[in-house]
Length: 414
Image (cartoon, rainbow, N blue to C red; front, top):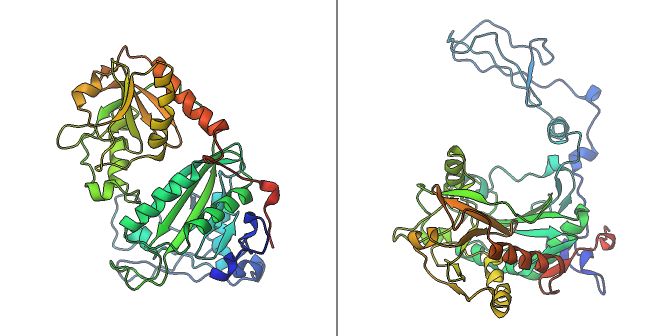
Protein backbone atom coordinates (compact mmCIF):
# COMPACT_ATOMS: atom_id res chain seq x y z
CA UNK A 1 0.00 0.00 0.00
CA UNK A 2 2.78 2.38 0.88
CA UNK A 3 4.35 1.97 -2.53
CA UNK A 4 1.24 3.26 -4.27
CA UNK A 5 1.65 6.59 -2.60
CA UNK A 6 5.24 7.43 -3.48
CA UNK A 7 5.49 10.72 -5.40
CA UNK A 8 7.05 10.82 -8.82
CA UNK A 9 10.08 13.10 -9.29
CA UNK A 10 9.02 16.63 -10.25
CA UNK A 11 5.37 15.52 -10.47
CA UNK A 12 2.45 17.63 -9.43
CA UNK A 13 1.03 16.69 -5.97
CA UNK A 14 -2.09 15.39 -7.70
CA UNK A 15 -0.23 12.39 -9.12
CA UNK A 16 0.62 10.69 -5.83
CA UNK A 17 -1.99 7.94 -5.95
CA UNK A 18 -0.89 5.66 -8.77
CA UNK A 19 -4.20 3.80 -9.15
CA UNK A 20 -6.89 6.23 -8.09
CA UNK A 21 -9.86 4.67 -9.83
CA UNK A 22 -10.67 1.23 -8.49
CA UNK A 23 -12.53 -1.55 -10.22
CA UNK A 24 -12.60 -4.64 -7.96
CA UNK A 25 -11.28 -7.89 -9.49
CA UNK A 26 -14.61 -9.63 -9.13
CA UNK A 27 -16.21 -6.99 -11.37
CA UNK A 28 -13.65 -7.63 -14.06
CA UNK A 29 -14.26 -11.38 -13.96
CA UNK A 30 -18.02 -11.34 -13.37
CA UNK A 31 -20.29 -13.48 -15.53
CA UNK A 32 -23.46 -12.51 -17.25
CA UNK A 33 -26.63 -13.15 -15.20
CA UNK A 34 -27.60 -15.95 -17.60
CA UNK A 35 -24.29 -17.71 -16.88
CA UNK A 36 -24.68 -17.64 -13.12
CA UNK A 37 -26.17 -20.58 -11.21
CA UNK A 38 -29.27 -19.83 -9.17
CA UNK A 39 -28.49 -18.82 -5.59
CA UNK A 40 -29.01 -21.43 -2.87
CA UNK A 41 -32.30 -21.36 -1.05
CA UNK A 42 -32.30 -21.24 2.73
CA UNK A 43 -35.10 -21.91 5.15
CA UNK A 44 -35.43 -20.05 8.42
CA UNK A 45 -37.91 -21.99 10.51
CA UNK A 46 -38.86 -22.08 14.17
CA UNK A 47 -39.96 -25.73 13.87
CA UNK A 48 -39.84 -28.58 11.42
CA UNK A 49 -42.25 -28.34 8.54
CA UNK A 50 -42.98 -30.08 5.27
CA UNK A 51 -43.46 -26.76 3.50
CA UNK A 52 -41.06 -26.31 0.62
CA UNK A 53 -38.90 -23.24 0.34
CA UNK A 54 -40.14 -20.64 -2.11
CA UNK A 55 -38.14 -20.63 -5.36
CA UNK A 56 -35.79 -17.76 -6.19
CA UNK A 57 -38.14 -16.37 -8.86
CA UNK A 58 -41.35 -17.11 -6.99
CA UNK A 59 -44.41 -15.11 -7.93
CA UNK A 60 -44.98 -14.41 -4.25
CA UNK A 61 -41.73 -12.46 -3.97
CA UNK A 62 -42.05 -8.90 -2.74
CA UNK A 63 -39.59 -6.06 -3.12
CA UNK A 64 -38.78 -3.77 -0.21
CA UNK A 65 -36.28 -0.95 -0.63
CA UNK A 66 -34.94 -2.50 -3.80
CA UNK A 67 -34.27 -5.97 -2.38
CA UNK A 68 -36.29 -9.16 -3.00
CA UNK A 69 -37.79 -10.68 0.13
CA UNK A 70 -39.49 -14.06 0.10
CA UNK A 71 -42.14 -14.35 2.77
CA UNK A 72 -45.01 -16.61 3.73
CA UNK A 73 -48.62 -15.50 3.65
CA UNK A 74 -48.68 -15.30 7.45
CA UNK A 75 -50.51 -12.20 8.62
CA UNK A 76 -48.81 -9.71 10.95
CA UNK A 77 -49.20 -10.74 14.56
CA UNK A 78 -49.93 -14.40 13.73
CA UNK A 79 -47.69 -17.10 15.16
CA UNK A 80 -48.18 -20.40 13.39
CA UNK A 81 -44.96 -21.89 14.72
CA UNK A 82 -43.21 -21.73 11.37
CA UNK A 83 -42.00 -18.77 9.34
CA UNK A 84 -40.63 -19.77 5.95
CA UNK A 85 -38.16 -17.20 4.67
CA UNK A 86 -35.99 -18.11 1.72
CA UNK A 87 -32.88 -15.91 1.79
CA UNK A 88 -30.92 -15.76 -1.47
CA UNK A 89 -27.16 -16.26 -1.37
CA UNK A 90 -25.67 -13.93 -3.97
CA UNK A 91 -22.46 -14.05 -5.91
CA UNK A 92 -20.09 -11.08 -5.67
CA UNK A 93 -21.29 -9.61 -8.95
CA UNK A 94 -24.95 -10.01 -7.94
CA UNK A 95 -24.34 -8.15 -4.68
CA UNK A 96 -22.72 -5.28 -6.57
CA UNK A 97 -25.62 -5.27 -9.04
CA UNK A 98 -28.09 -5.09 -6.15
CA UNK A 99 -26.18 -2.28 -4.47
CA UNK A 100 -25.85 -0.32 -7.68
CA UNK A 101 -29.57 -0.65 -8.31
CA UNK A 102 -30.31 0.64 -4.82
CA UNK A 103 -27.79 3.47 -4.71
CA UNK A 104 -28.06 4.86 -8.25
CA UNK A 105 -31.21 6.96 -8.52
CA UNK A 106 -32.15 8.73 -11.72
CA UNK A 107 -30.39 11.90 -10.65
CA UNK A 108 -26.67 11.99 -10.00
CA UNK A 109 -25.74 10.67 -6.56
CA UNK A 110 -24.32 13.26 -4.13
CA UNK A 111 -21.49 10.94 -3.07
CA UNK A 112 -19.00 11.79 -5.79
CA UNK A 113 -15.83 9.99 -4.73
CA UNK A 114 -14.40 7.93 -1.89
CA UNK A 115 -10.85 7.12 -0.88
CA UNK A 116 -10.09 4.02 1.20
CA UNK A 117 -6.69 2.93 2.43
CA UNK A 118 -8.24 -0.55 2.70
CA UNK A 119 -8.09 -0.89 -1.08
CA UNK A 120 -5.57 1.93 -1.52
CA UNK A 121 -7.37 4.06 -4.07
CA UNK A 122 -10.40 6.08 -5.10
CA UNK A 123 -13.75 4.82 -6.33
CA UNK A 124 -16.40 6.93 -8.04
CA UNK A 125 -19.13 4.29 -7.64
CA UNK A 126 -21.39 5.04 -4.62
CA UNK A 127 -22.25 1.33 -4.41
CA UNK A 128 -18.64 0.58 -3.51
CA UNK A 129 -18.25 3.36 -0.93
CA UNK A 130 -18.29 1.00 2.03
CA UNK A 131 -16.03 -0.16 4.83
CA UNK A 132 -15.57 -3.64 6.35
CA UNK A 133 -18.15 -4.73 8.92
CA UNK A 134 -15.39 -5.87 11.29
CA UNK A 135 -13.80 -2.42 11.25
CA UNK A 136 -13.63 -1.33 14.89
CA UNK A 137 -15.05 2.06 13.92
CA UNK A 138 -18.27 0.21 13.01
CA UNK A 139 -18.80 -2.12 15.95
CA UNK A 140 -16.80 -0.38 18.70
CA UNK A 141 -16.91 3.27 17.70
CA UNK A 142 -13.11 3.38 17.69
CA UNK A 143 -12.61 6.10 15.14
CA UNK A 144 -12.35 9.85 14.65
CA UNK A 145 -13.39 12.15 11.83
CA UNK A 146 -13.38 15.70 10.56
CA UNK A 147 -15.00 17.77 7.83
CA UNK A 148 -13.96 20.66 5.64
CA UNK A 149 -15.87 22.73 3.10
CA UNK A 150 -15.21 22.55 -0.63
CA UNK A 151 -16.31 25.82 -2.19
CA UNK A 152 -15.75 26.90 -5.79
CA UNK A 153 -12.91 24.39 -6.17
CA UNK A 154 -11.14 25.43 -2.97
CA UNK A 155 -10.86 23.44 0.25
CA UNK A 156 -11.41 25.90 3.07
CA UNK A 157 -9.20 25.71 6.16
CA UNK A 158 -8.09 22.17 5.33
CA UNK A 159 -4.85 22.38 7.30
CA UNK A 160 -6.58 23.46 10.51
CA UNK A 161 -8.98 20.55 10.22
CA UNK A 162 -6.12 18.11 9.60
CA UNK A 163 -4.31 19.32 12.72
CA UNK A 164 -7.45 18.79 14.81
CA UNK A 165 -8.07 15.46 13.06
CA UNK A 166 -4.70 14.06 14.06
CA UNK A 167 -5.04 15.49 17.55
CA UNK A 168 -8.36 13.63 17.90
CA UNK A 169 -6.68 10.46 16.62
CA UNK A 170 -3.93 10.80 19.21
CA UNK A 171 -6.50 11.17 22.00
CA UNK A 172 -8.36 8.14 20.66
CA UNK A 173 -5.07 6.18 20.54
CA UNK A 174 -5.23 5.64 16.80
CA UNK A 175 -2.03 5.98 14.79
CA UNK A 176 -2.37 7.32 11.28
CA UNK A 177 -1.25 5.05 8.42
CA UNK A 178 0.19 8.12 6.70
CA UNK A 179 1.92 11.35 7.76
CA UNK A 180 -0.12 14.56 7.61
CA UNK A 181 1.47 15.64 4.33
CA UNK A 182 0.31 12.43 2.65
CA UNK A 183 -3.18 12.66 4.13
CA UNK A 184 -3.41 16.18 2.76
CA UNK A 185 -2.32 15.09 -0.70
CA UNK A 186 -4.83 12.22 -0.74
CA UNK A 187 -7.67 14.57 0.18
CA UNK A 188 -6.75 17.07 -2.54
CA UNK A 189 -6.54 14.28 -5.11
CA UNK A 190 -9.88 12.89 -3.95
CA UNK A 191 -11.53 16.29 -4.35
CA UNK A 192 -10.04 16.58 -7.84
CA UNK A 193 -11.17 13.08 -8.85
CA UNK A 194 -14.72 13.83 -7.70
CA UNK A 195 -15.07 16.69 -10.22
CA UNK A 196 -17.18 18.34 -7.53
CA UNK A 197 -16.85 22.12 -7.27
CA UNK A 198 -18.86 22.73 -4.09
CA UNK A 199 -19.64 20.35 -1.25
CA UNK A 200 -18.14 18.80 1.85
CA UNK A 201 -15.05 16.66 2.31
CA UNK A 202 -15.42 14.23 5.20
CA UNK A 203 -12.62 11.99 6.43
CA UNK A 204 -12.09 9.33 9.09
CA UNK A 205 -9.30 7.48 10.88
CA UNK A 206 -10.28 4.06 12.17
CA UNK A 207 -8.53 1.57 14.43
CA UNK A 208 -9.12 -0.76 11.49
CA UNK A 209 -10.72 -4.08 10.59
CA UNK A 210 -9.67 -7.55 11.68
CA UNK A 211 -11.99 -8.93 14.34
CA UNK A 212 -15.03 -8.25 16.50
CA UNK A 213 -13.17 -7.98 19.81
CA UNK A 214 -13.09 -4.99 22.13
CA UNK A 215 -9.34 -4.50 22.08
CA UNK A 216 -7.58 -3.13 19.01
CA UNK A 217 -4.32 -4.85 19.95
CA UNK A 218 -4.82 -7.63 17.42
CA UNK A 219 -5.50 -5.34 14.47
CA UNK A 220 -2.90 -5.08 11.74
CA UNK A 221 -3.38 -1.53 10.42
CA UNK A 222 -5.42 1.57 11.08
CA UNK A 223 -7.44 2.82 8.10
CA UNK A 224 -8.07 6.18 6.47
CA UNK A 225 -11.36 6.84 4.66
CA UNK A 226 -12.67 9.98 2.97
CA UNK A 227 -15.64 10.96 0.84
CA UNK A 228 -16.64 14.01 -1.21
CA UNK A 229 -20.32 14.94 -0.98
CA UNK A 230 -21.87 17.39 -3.41
CA UNK A 231 -23.99 20.01 -1.66
CA UNK A 232 -24.82 23.69 -1.93
CA UNK A 233 -24.13 26.39 0.64
CA UNK A 234 -25.60 29.82 1.14
CA UNK A 235 -25.38 32.49 3.78
CA UNK A 236 -27.88 31.82 6.56
CA UNK A 237 -30.01 34.93 7.03
CA UNK A 238 -32.98 33.39 8.85
CA UNK A 239 -32.89 32.62 12.55
CA UNK A 240 -33.67 29.32 14.27
CA UNK A 241 -35.10 28.31 17.65
CA UNK A 242 -33.34 26.13 20.22
CA UNK A 243 -34.02 24.48 23.56
CA UNK A 244 -31.86 23.38 26.48
CA UNK A 245 -30.92 19.74 26.01
CA UNK A 246 -31.87 17.17 28.63
CA UNK A 247 -29.47 14.64 27.12
CA UNK A 248 -26.33 14.22 29.28
CA UNK A 249 -23.16 15.73 27.87
CA UNK A 250 -20.18 13.60 26.99
CA UNK A 251 -17.33 13.55 29.54
CA UNK A 252 -14.63 16.12 28.66
CA UNK A 253 -12.17 13.48 27.43
CA UNK A 254 -14.56 12.29 24.74
CA UNK A 255 -16.23 15.64 24.07
CA UNK A 256 -12.89 17.27 23.25
CA UNK A 257 -12.03 14.75 20.51
CA UNK A 258 -14.05 14.53 17.31
CA UNK A 259 -14.87 10.83 17.58
CA UNK A 260 -17.58 8.86 15.81
CA UNK A 261 -19.60 8.21 18.98
CA UNK A 262 -22.34 10.73 18.21
CA UNK A 263 -25.32 8.99 19.82
CA UNK A 264 -25.70 11.75 22.48
CA UNK A 265 -25.55 14.32 19.67
CA UNK A 266 -28.15 12.42 17.66
CA UNK A 267 -30.48 12.18 20.67
CA UNK A 268 -30.00 15.87 21.37
CA UNK A 269 -30.98 16.72 17.80
CA UNK A 270 -33.96 14.35 17.87
CA UNK A 271 -35.10 15.86 21.17
CA UNK A 272 -35.16 19.29 19.54
CA UNK A 273 -36.97 18.11 16.43
CA UNK A 274 -39.62 16.40 18.54
CA UNK A 275 -40.33 19.80 20.10
CA UNK A 276 -40.43 21.59 16.76
CA UNK A 277 -37.16 23.51 17.04
CA UNK A 278 -33.86 23.34 15.19
CA UNK A 279 -31.45 22.05 17.83
CA UNK A 280 -30.65 21.70 21.52
CA UNK A 281 -27.98 23.47 23.54
CA UNK A 282 -25.94 21.61 26.12
CA UNK A 283 -25.37 23.22 29.52
CA UNK A 284 -22.68 21.78 31.80
CA UNK A 285 -23.12 20.73 35.42
CA UNK A 286 -22.03 24.17 36.63
CA UNK A 287 -24.69 25.98 34.63
CA UNK A 288 -22.42 27.27 31.88
CA UNK A 289 -23.30 27.11 28.18
CA UNK A 290 -21.40 24.33 26.41
CA UNK A 291 -22.24 23.72 22.73
CA UNK A 292 -24.82 22.55 20.25
CA UNK A 293 -25.06 18.99 18.92
CA UNK A 294 -22.54 19.71 16.14
CA UNK A 295 -21.67 23.39 16.44
CA UNK A 296 -20.18 25.91 18.82
CA UNK A 297 -22.30 28.82 20.03
CA UNK A 298 -21.42 32.50 20.23
CA UNK A 299 -23.12 35.51 21.76
CA UNK A 300 -23.09 39.27 21.37
CA UNK A 301 -23.82 40.97 24.65
CA UNK A 302 -25.82 44.14 24.97
CA UNK A 303 -22.47 45.86 25.48
CA UNK A 304 -21.48 44.62 22.00
CA UNK A 305 -18.98 42.05 23.25
CA UNK A 306 -18.53 38.90 21.16
CA UNK A 307 -18.37 35.96 23.57
CA UNK A 308 -17.46 32.36 22.72
CA UNK A 309 -17.74 29.78 25.52
CA UNK A 310 -14.76 27.64 24.53
CA UNK A 311 -13.45 25.25 27.18
CA UNK A 312 -11.84 21.84 27.61
CA UNK A 313 -15.31 20.36 28.14
CA UNK A 314 -16.31 20.75 24.49
CA UNK A 315 -14.98 20.34 20.98
CA UNK A 316 -13.45 23.64 19.92
CA UNK A 317 -14.31 24.29 16.30
CA UNK A 318 -11.85 25.36 13.62
CA UNK A 319 -14.38 27.93 12.38
CA UNK A 320 -14.84 29.29 15.90
CA UNK A 321 -11.09 29.81 16.17
CA UNK A 322 -11.04 31.54 12.80
CA UNK A 323 -13.94 33.73 13.89
CA UNK A 324 -11.92 35.03 16.83
CA UNK A 325 -9.31 36.33 14.37
CA UNK A 326 -11.71 37.77 11.81
CA UNK A 327 -13.98 39.46 14.34
CA UNK A 328 -11.13 41.72 15.41
CA UNK A 329 -11.86 43.65 12.19
CA UNK A 330 -15.24 44.61 13.62
CA UNK A 331 -13.51 45.83 16.77
CA UNK A 332 -11.22 48.00 14.64
CA UNK A 333 -14.29 49.39 12.86
CA UNK A 334 -15.93 50.20 16.18
CA UNK A 335 -18.83 47.80 15.61
CA UNK A 336 -17.75 45.47 18.42
CA UNK A 337 -16.35 46.48 21.79
CA UNK A 338 -14.30 43.29 22.28
CA UNK A 339 -13.86 39.63 21.38
CA UNK A 340 -13.23 37.06 24.10
CA UNK A 341 -13.59 33.45 25.19
CA UNK A 342 -14.92 32.72 28.66
CA UNK A 343 -17.61 30.87 30.56
CA UNK A 344 -21.12 32.15 29.88
CA UNK A 345 -24.02 31.34 32.20
CA UNK A 346 -27.41 30.41 30.79
CA UNK A 347 -28.93 33.56 32.28
CA UNK A 348 -26.29 35.76 30.64
CA UNK A 349 -26.68 33.91 27.34
CA UNK A 350 -30.45 34.30 27.25
CA UNK A 351 -30.05 37.98 28.08
CA UNK A 352 -27.65 38.56 25.18
CA UNK A 353 -28.49 40.81 22.25
CA UNK A 354 -27.64 38.20 19.60
CA UNK A 355 -26.82 34.50 19.48
CA UNK A 356 -25.53 32.18 16.77
CA UNK A 357 -24.25 28.71 15.90
CA UNK A 358 -20.71 28.54 14.50
CA UNK A 359 -19.67 25.52 12.43
CA UNK A 360 -17.64 24.56 9.37
CA UNK A 361 -20.55 24.00 7.00
CA UNK A 362 -22.86 26.78 8.24
CA UNK A 363 -20.61 28.73 8.99
CA UNK A 364 -22.93 31.12 10.93
CA UNK A 365 -26.55 30.33 11.79
CA UNK A 366 -28.48 32.98 13.76
CA UNK A 367 -30.45 31.86 16.84
CA UNK A 368 -33.47 34.01 17.68
CA UNK A 369 -35.17 32.04 20.47
CA UNK A 370 -34.04 29.80 23.33
CA UNK A 371 -36.56 27.85 25.43
CA UNK A 372 -39.35 30.03 23.99
CA UNK A 373 -37.55 33.17 25.16
CA UNK A 374 -36.55 35.64 22.41
CA UNK A 375 -32.88 36.47 22.09
CA UNK A 376 -32.67 40.25 21.97
CA UNK A 377 -35.63 41.48 19.95
CA UNK A 378 -36.20 38.02 18.48
CA UNK A 379 -34.80 39.03 15.08
CA UNK A 380 -31.53 38.28 13.32
CA UNK A 381 -29.05 40.90 14.49
CA UNK A 382 -26.92 43.19 12.35
CA UNK A 383 -23.69 42.11 14.04
CA UNK A 384 -24.49 38.44 13.43
CA UNK A 385 -24.89 39.22 9.74
CA UNK A 386 -21.65 41.22 9.78
CA UNK A 387 -19.80 38.27 11.33
CA UNK A 388 -21.34 35.93 8.77
CA UNK A 389 -20.21 38.22 5.95
CA UNK A 390 -16.64 38.18 7.31
CA UNK A 391 -16.51 34.40 7.28
CA UNK A 392 -18.02 34.13 3.81
CA UNK A 393 -15.50 36.65 2.50
CA UNK A 394 -12.76 34.47 3.99
CA UNK A 395 -14.22 31.36 2.34
CA UNK A 396 -14.60 32.99 -1.07
CA UNK A 397 -11.50 35.16 -1.30
CA UNK A 398 -9.42 34.64 1.84
CA UNK A 399 -5.64 34.16 1.99
CA UNK A 400 -3.91 31.19 0.34
CA UNK A 401 -3.09 29.83 3.78
CA UNK A 402 -6.81 29.19 4.27
CA UNK A 403 -7.86 28.14 0.76
CA UNK A 404 -6.33 25.12 -0.97
CA UNK A 405 -7.03 25.01 -4.73
CA UNK A 406 -8.40 21.83 -6.28
CA UNK A 407 -7.29 21.65 -9.91
CA UNK A 408 -9.51 19.09 -11.62
CA UNK A 409 -7.67 19.25 -14.93
CA UNK A 410 -4.39 18.32 -13.25
CA UNK A 411 -5.66 15.07 -11.77
CA UNK A 412 -3.38 12.35 -13.12
CA UNK A 413 -4.49 8.72 -13.34
CA UNK A 414 -1.56 6.43 -14.18
